[in-house]
Image 1 (tube, rainbow, N blue to C red):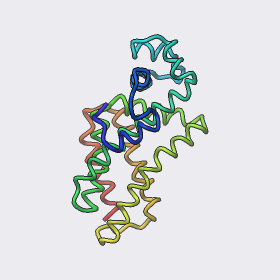
Image 2: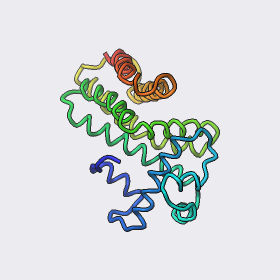
Image 3: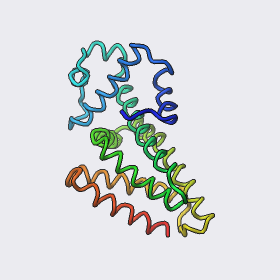
Length: 213
């Protein structure tokens, strides 16, 4: 996992305490192993044994920290989303104007896919399972809302500066931009892997830019 920024630390504190004990460190290791396992399997029937093999620990120990396998899955999804948001915030902080901020936001999603390909695969797996699980869909909505609000804020800044000329309400357009990025991740995963990333990244930003100007 990347070095923790203030945002990453804040989100992880919802899952783990500020000062990590050996027990907390084991929990975090299990979460990371779960992400790797979710990324490598095709079925939702993932066992504690599967995760234990990746974490190099016993299934009994994993069950001790996460007795509810579904909760383990949901917590791992939150860790993934925290990493993605961390990369967005870091990229945006270096931008000088609303257009640069939007481009940085979009392109930082691709840096996440490039640096954490298994997190991307695990997130796509999570989205797949959302199709048949209303609780997962609820959690997904909660996790994506932060990104939608951040995009909408940048859109409002661009409109106020007369840089963006958008036809949709900012929050609606923000959701569309998120969907475009998610679609790009699916295309990269299903069509050519990371070798297609740069082409799809440029195509995605070109499309988003046309929605803004």
